[in-house]
Structures are given as C-alpha cells and as structure tokens.
Length: 219
Image 1 (cartoon, rainbow, N blue to C red):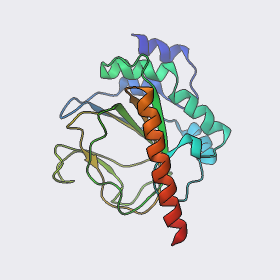
Image 2 (image 1 turned 180 degrees about the horizontal axis):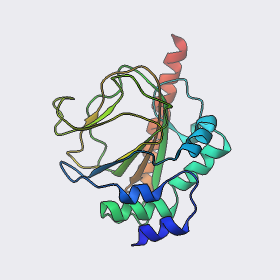
Image 3 (image 1 turned 60 degrees about the vertical axis):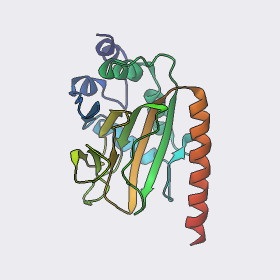
Image 4 (image 1 turned 90 degrees about the vertical axis):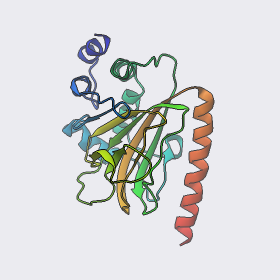
C-alpha cells in the first residue's frame, strides 16, 4: 500500500503515520477516525515549547502567528506528501492537487462549540489537539447524528495532547462541544477544493480573528 510504504521510508519527527494507518475508519453517519498519540510524546514537548502564543479566542491563519522552529517543522510535515497519501488512501478520496489550509486556536470562549457542519468547499477536516491535559467537561468535541442536540453523539473526543480527529466533510458531518473558556490548543488542517477557497478562508479567518482581538483588548 502506498501510504504504508510512505510511512516506512519517510522519517517524520512529529507525525505517527503508522498509528494513523492502523486506526479504524468509521463510516456512519459520515467517515471519521480518532488517533490518540498521533503526535508522539517527545515531539509534543517540542511543539508545546514552540506553539504560537495566542491570548485571544478565534482561529488564526499561520501568516498571522509567530512560532518556533519545531512548530515550523511540524507544519511542513502536515503539508507533506506522506500525510496526503495516507489520508487519500484511508478516506478513498483523490487529494492530488488539492491545496491545504491550516489555522490554529489557542483559547476557547463560552460561545464556541455550537453545532455545525464545515463548508462544502472543505473536503477533509483534521484537528490535532495539543493541550497538556484536559479535565474540563466542556470542550470535548462531539461527532453528532443530527444538528438537534449535543447529546445525540456518536463519539466524544477530549482535546488531549497529540490526539488527531479527522472526518470527511459532508452535509451530515455535524459536530460541536459543550461550552468552555480558557486555553484550548488546536491545529486545524483542511484539504479544500481550490486555491480560491484558501484565499477566501484566509481573509475570513484573518478579519474575524482581528475583530475578536480588538474587542478582547477593549474590554
């Protein structure tokens, strides 16, 4: 298998593709999987040190952030061909030529987590959590059967360090989480339809983050 071959020949510092390949893919009510330890322990320590300092809520494009060399190397691996091949095989989707978009969160606010599906221009959503630990009942992402209730969940994923959650974006890929406020480190990777989507989303996230930053500082 191409993805298995990639994982054996590419020495990745921050991503455990073998764990990804072994993880079962659920198919109902939409394709999804969870990979605990996708970012191994030693790599998590480096990423924690070099993670962007984010004091406001919202999703920030990489271009709006400053971060250290370990985080830079981690982003390069996320955008590499090895991970692309692994996802294409696992989700049975052609990702050749599909651009990626990455945003980062560092803080959660009580208004976050409302039930939604991602926009149809996104093909796959990948969330990688980088919190040292997670004890709060809120902030645990729930994959849902419907948009009607957070209690109608098929899975609940605490944002524990190194955990990957990924799903195919469909009209039924409902998700959300109970309210929580405070530090909540998440890297979001999306494969999207075109570069036009990337430009549009970068503009949207950038404007939204700057507005939230302005009001947070004005309080």
